[in-house]
Image (cartoon, rainbow, N blue to C red):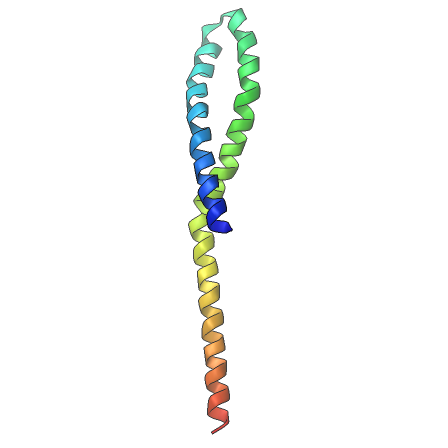
Length: 96
């Protein structure tokens, strides 16, 4: 399930980044233009841009931390397997 989620989250993040990257320069131009009719457009565009940036920040943080999470989980499984192996060896040596 996690591989499926990671795959689709990565795709979603990439596809959301494209319109966000297009909107940012447009917003900068509108802000510095000083044209009052464009300021109305700015308010409308800003309603879309802010949630998109929030979603990008959340998904980006998850994708950034994903390798560290996987390494942490992998090390935990290795320690558990090693502990089990040592317990089995200890139990086997006691029966002799």
